[in-house]
Image 1 (cartoon, protein in one colour):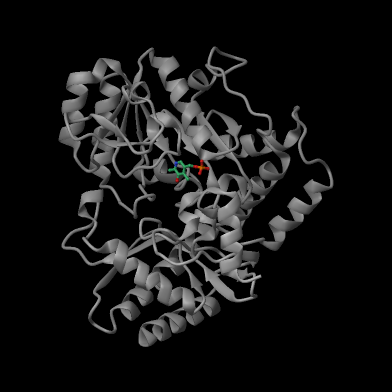
Image 2 (cartoon, rainbow, N blue to C red):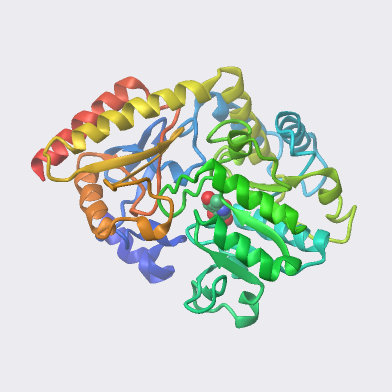
Length: 426
Ligand SMILES: *Cc1c(COP(=O)(O)O)cnc(C)c1O
């Protein structure tokens, strides 16, 4: 069965042939690759072609695919139980590890995805403040729940319009949206709506619409404004948590969020999300408090033990430091190769082990409006020329690239050669 035949079959039984839209390659054109196996930094498609993976399942795989140490834990756990729907020590161990590591996490609740984590954390914020509205920012992604699938409206500042069909108007009325990197707009909005805003939710490192690295002063200022109006600050660290470092962006900015959400790395490659915060806030959650939230597979033992094994290994071997150094070295070299032909003038925004390629700009790209025109098309061309050589980037110019512990110097040297060849053939 060829890849094209598999895609035809998939399209017959699933919308667009996929179970999450970006996977369809719609953004870059062409047919998606069907993979059958993965190991370390590598993916293998159904025709046995090998690719170096920089998508890494969109972020969870900080150690690469099937790290042998983690795989052993997974195999052992499968032999113990698959799910209990009851109390067990595995979620306890992961919770204790995180509470020990992260000062603003006193209590944590595990769920099964980032979307669920954010939905639930917002419920806590509303319950804690008795207020209904939330403020989010254009260019930040917080999962696909109704009230968050919004963008700036065309009318009044702060007004939201839906970013998907099927979302009722009433779902939007409590979501306010502002552009990133504009503290004055936040000040104005709070002056007007301050008493009804339960929380400000932000990706402290926006990495779902390119990599929009924010200024420290901006993040500090908007958190201060929110708190001064009695609103909570929710850091959505589903992508940055345990990626930029063990304590996430809260540590980088030296800001204690009231609530924080996790996903991706926290489950070590299995479906886990979490929301967390102070004892007072988290004790609002059932059964201690009145905020209902539950999950059949929550605290799944395989995800709990895989996640804990990943975090412990990152800490024990001090892997964040080496990962960040190697990412920087790789992206610097990649950038110089991309610009060798002299006609492209690529730049690569990098933060720890996250990177994003785009055309050079006068100043750092911090808002979605600053993404250069033609970005999507330019990326699609780069994507396909690299794909041909066996380098797999996330199939959209608005997704970031990830580096993993498995991407050792041998592999990156080979990748850089492949990139050079890809550009020559182009
Ligand atoms: C990935 C992501 C989500 C959604 O998580 P899912 O597990 O895909 O539901 C939410 N917020 C951020 C910041 C993310 O990166």
